Amino acid sequence: MGFFIIFLVALAVCSVGFKRYIWFISIGYGFSVAAIGVALLVMFGVQGRLHVIPVIMASLAIVYGLRLGGYLLIREYRSASYHDVMQDAIENGSRVKAPLKIVTWLACALLYACEVSPILFRLDNNAANDVVGIVGASIMGAGIVLESFSDFTKNRFKQRHPHGFCNVGPFKLVRCPNYLGEVLTWTGVFVSGVTIYDGAWQWIAAIGGYLCIVWIMFGGARRLELRQNKEYGDDPAYQHYAKHTPILIPFIPLYGVANAKWLIG
Image (cartoon, rainbow, N blue to C red; front, top):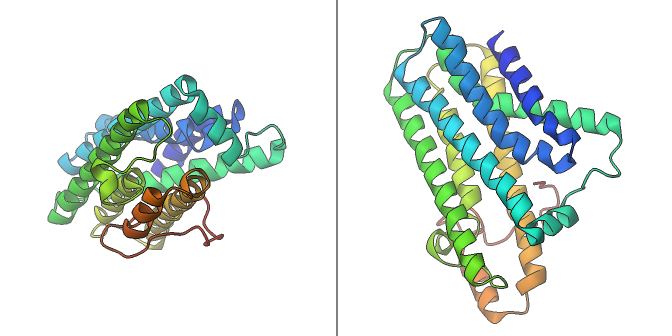
């Protein structure tokens, strides 16, 4: 029942995608995660079944979702160049028929519920606080900080160098540190539940949500790489940067995923 409720919450929030198709996976994503965090605190708070770790993680989900949703909403309306890029990179919805929009809506809501499900399962299973939960919450928090700082760094850089590629701060570590922060966030959420998942269904939901978001983040990195190759491919400085800075995972010599057409993002 708990999973069904958070699925309904995600459905309600990401329905904004019917206004603008991309919002299913952008603004609807961030605010859905925040709303699920609120729903978890309310549901289990009323039952008197809240524990420290899931309370922290649900609160982090709220912070994460509000920060991401708000950031994307502001950027969408304030940055004409960003809006144009997204319109070119992702189907804007004008040619998407209603049945496909409904499928996208349902799939997105299911994904968002699965991503947050480890927090739900810890609460639902009335699991005690443990070291694995603390480690998971810490990784989640670190991921949120990295993603937020990376977005802030790139924003500041683009204000000063609107036609340059960002290679400062966390962008010295990997070319997509914001996506790395996203991966770390959901790695922490998944890891937090490995000692408390009960039954095949909970494992399937948690693993499915985690693998899907990692796949999508690599797809996002591919989309960014293709766009940057088009914009900066003739710049020797960019060529050197791209050949010596991993695309997403630090210290792993994976410098490009442009040819991996099976990735989406």
